[in-house]
Length: 115
Image 1: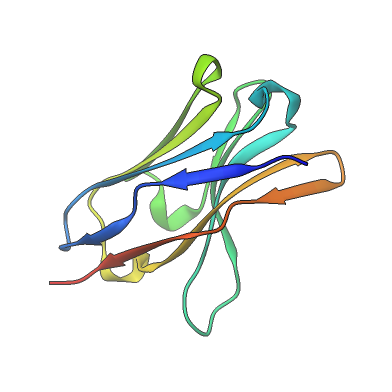
Image 2: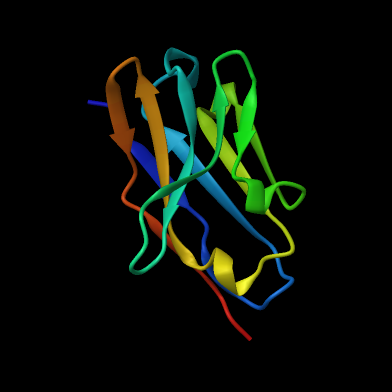
């Protein structure tokens, strides 16, 4: 069973930065995609950013120009760098990966953007 362990998150003021990391229990190049979703209270879970096995990235429109995603195969880690954070970025962020139709999730980490 694939395990995804997240780190990072916390409380930050508007305009601040945070870095989320997700470490997998196996080679990240086994995954078709790896990335981050988020879910705010009362809202559906949405894709924030992901990177596929070929290195192609996707971003939610509202985070483009502010967030970047990167990976380190030797550390089996994908990192989401979040800059210029806004209150509307407040949510629980979940690491996600998939191998074809098999989906794997981390436990979630809270990100709160507040003065």
